[in-house]
Amino acid sequence: MSLYQLQDSTAIVTGGSSGIGLACVELLLEAGAAVAFCGRDENRLRSAEAELRQRFPEARLLAHVCNVLDADSVKAFAAASLAALGPASVLINNAGQGRVSTFADTTDSAWTEELNLKFFSVINPVHAFMTQLQRQPNAAIVCVNSLLASQPEPHMVATSAARAGVMNLVRSMATEFAGQGIRVNGILIGLVESGQWRRRFEAREERDLDWTQWTARLAQQKHIPLGRLGLPIEAARAILFLASPLSAYTTGSHIDVSGGLSRHA
Image 1 (cartoon, rainbow, N blue to C red):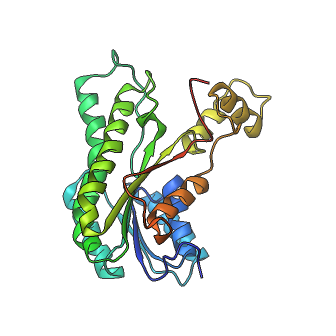
Image 2 (cartoon, rainbow, N blue to C red):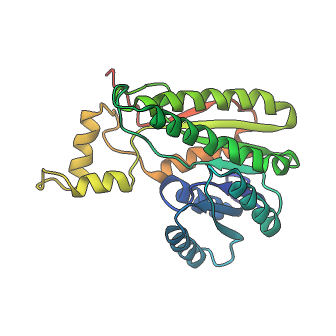
């Protein structure tokens, strides 16, 4: 029996074709859950689906092309998931990316785009899956957020502000949904290995440094006490804890998954 106690449940993962989202899908399948995951890039989505089906040939799995900023697209994803796997009891909101800009460099349209992305990548899935979640005895929503929510960076001003808003959205939903038996929590990630960091590594000037050395130096520069970048699977484990009955008395909370990152150190 899996530690996470998610056997026979149905879990939804947005942004599930790579990184933290894909790691969540893998852990959920290992735990015996049925999983519906989505992504915007169909090629990447199908590639991830093929690998997952090879690893988990008996899995109940649905991969669906979906733009989380399009309410109708998310509703279609919710309908497809319900038809294929039954009502969802877990919703993991993982879609989103960061914007590098200072206040002076951020245009009004960029502000609108960033706030829309961060908020509606959560709002649209919650609206679409709410009826399903309300039917389940151990329903949970988990939002993947960033440490920027509590430690804003001036070179990511719009993303920092939006992330702080999402953190408070999680707390507000937790209070409002508690009476319906739906828990809402989040994680705050620091620097986690991703395609973005791999691309920066490939473009590095210090060609004498390998990946381990380069990331260790980055961790030192960023004042990460554990001395390395996080792994997607490490974030996913925290997410599954919050999604599972293991955290049945936890709502409105955030787990810091940042290696102790502090820019004030």
